[in-house]
Length: 83
Image 1: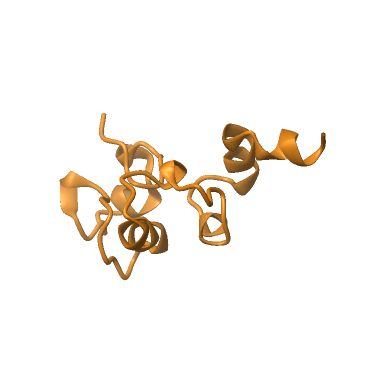
Image 2: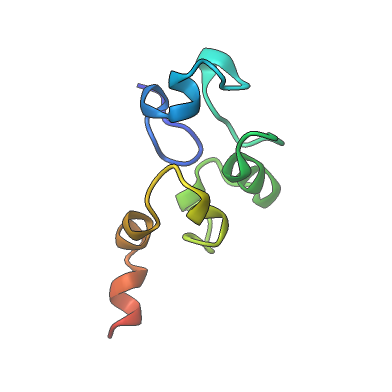
């Protein structure tokens, strides 16, 4: 199973399922990508996966495809903010 830069399994990505992934079957990787703000952001910040970034989750993350609430949950920041 390939995991895209956003953290979603490529075969579940809406863009991939429509056959519109700019990387084809390789899936999203960190690089300039006009169709994926997350891939572009990761490339510019030098991380392989969005959640490796110290700023995760951020405004770019809100664009999806993973729900922002889930991103907060896996980052642990939702719990830190409520302490």
